[in-house]
Length: 243
Image 1 (cartoon, rainbow, N blue to C red):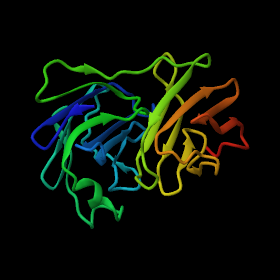
Image 2 (cartoon, rainbow, N blue to C red):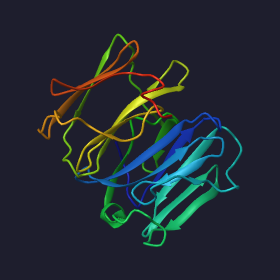
Image 3 (cartoon, rainbow, N blue to C red):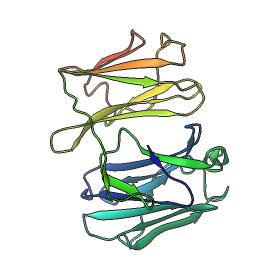
């Protein structure tokens, strides 16, 4: 997490090709660590963006988006919205409102006083970052992980908080190779990146708020336990995946 508020500008460097499906996923937090919005970019063939907890779907970035692959994004949380430039060109400058946002709960998130920003674990595009209060750019850290290792992730989110755990997998070249996501909705759901969309987690999901997830990439699929209980053990196939 990095300090971030309306007095600071967050700079993020990317070097992703259009069509790579890399994603820049920046989340805003308040002092309590609660979500306070966010800005996402998907490097699809036609790059798109999303305002987290404002739009429920992606929108195309404008035609004036610079063509250079190496991009420096400057993200500024204004008093009433968000301003984003890319290589010095303004690509977004919006005032948040009921007319702009199709998420009816947007005020619950964007009206919070932001104090920090973080990169989602599923971010595959961000190379480095800094704010106007920092000096040199800071590399975005990624964790070694393969089929011989088990990834442990601890969460402490309430059901209904809409917090999300977003874990993305990559190969040695930084190409996306799947992922496991959980949304702490009233009925917690998961999705397998590039395989399936939201599905409810099973009824045996432990009720404790403090959870330790163990994520294991098997030879043919994925196994996930939560507080020692197996909540997912799947073999990936055409029958399972709708992507």
